[in-house]
Image 1 (spheres, helix red, strand yellow):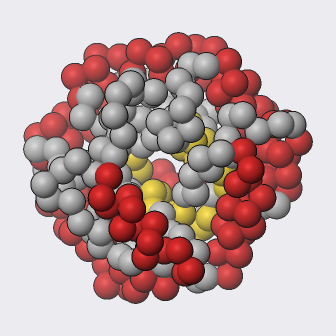
Image 2 (cartoon, helix red, strand yellow):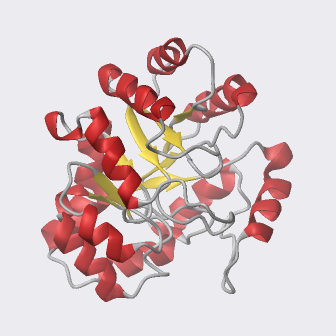
Image 3 (cartoon, rainbow, N blue to C red):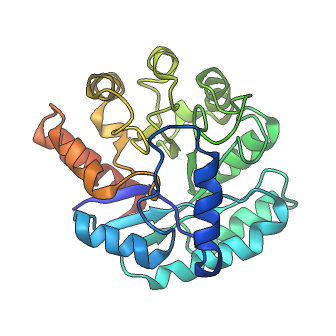
Amino acid sequence: MIIDFHTHVYPEAIAKKTVGFLLDKISLPDKKAWTDGTAASLVSSMEKSGVDFSVTLPVVTKPSQFESINRFSENLRDVPGIIPFGGIHPDCDDIEEKLLFLKSSGFAGIKLHPDYQGTFIDDEKYIKLIGVCRELGLKVIIHAGIDVGLPDPVHCPPDRVLKMLSEVGIERCDPFIILAHLGGWRMQSEVEEKLCGKNVFFDTGYCLDKYPPKDVVRIISLHGADKILFATDSPWGDQREYVRLLESLPLGDGEKEMIFSSNARRLLGI
């Protein structure tokens, strides 16, 4: 089984426009979208790549989007192979009530994007929000490190992540936080120094084809394959190529199985 823990889809009416807008913001010469941003295109990619399940992650960029974005995410449950997460903004009113609503609606977790939400990850609003998620048993996946489409400041660097983890008491509970992009995109040295070995998961989204393989293997070795999740950040990463790249890494079969599947199954209860 292969589970892609980090993908994005958009409503059909705006998918093409949204993908084009986001693609224009990416400041890399090899930028490309590998799907058209719709659920149908993601499912087609999964079929070609041997991916069994994809977790879709919405980004709520302003509080007023809470209802519409989560309504769209909830409807994605009707798409075979799609596991939608919910989304929330740290400036939403009634955070506890909204998170309880997401939990009761059947979402396994939520996505936070500190850069797009204009809030540092160690802000007391995030700490409160993540603390409530811990109490409710909601998983929390966070964009970590640099964002290729947004300028400075970086809202989720490793030093601020450390403060947040301390505030929410991460070492005193089962891991429920996932730091996307191997703990902090393009901040490998700080990730290795400050975050590897902590009681959190990293995902591989947008890294396997952007980092040298030796960097990927070193971070996995330092952090532990039991806390790494296979992820592509589709449509920005190609699922078929990411499967090939992970399979090509000099890791043991057991390590690859944990990364491809068993870690995610443990988190998601499947």
